[in-house]
Length: 292
Image (cartoon, rainbow, N blue to C red; front, side, top):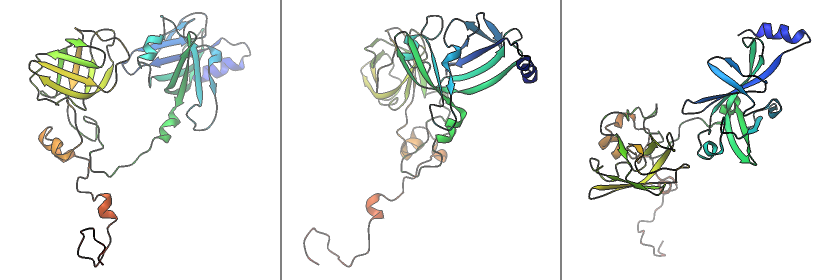
């Protein structure tokens, strides 16, 4: 990549400039768009013409506000579809914007790097809020002192390996209404084992989508798992899912269920609000009477 060659090309007075965008979803699938009239290819991505974004679609402003950049494009079966947006597949997708010399794509400069924020769709098009790298400065940092553990099961603070046997399983859906799922024969785990855990769809139309588990019950040979919210794509009987154990953030669960007490991040013995508001007094009797 030669930025100097691009500068020399821009100073020549006659330019062959186009803009390219690459959108990479959290599942690893990437899309390339360009406002040039022919497809361009570089860095292993094909940037296709006539789909998605256009040159007039981006407007940048200074500052650290969330909406420092906005992208507008057309919904298309060949690029970004309404179904994928509704299903949340583009939530938080990484975005890169390039200024490219189209007759020599190696001469280019990266103008923007960030991620999708809020996405709205209407009348066959979409509008996406683009959040720059400075958006990370708006994220609160620091440690929270509370009784329950603030860590997410399996993250760097927790340190627990969810992939070890007994904590994840794959199963085939027997029946479902989109929020309630039943599994036949999935009885090797105690009731409520997956509560507060995650269910991820592995096959079918909703492949890649996941939801938080609200309830996990066992009745005979049937196991019923209920999510907090419906998945935003069709899920059918026969689809395969991955269920991961849940954590209720209590110290006893960390010790008994996960044997991970050394990494517990909560403070179970922290005084409650009543203790913090207590004050010295000479009164010995606390029976609710008016005696002093």
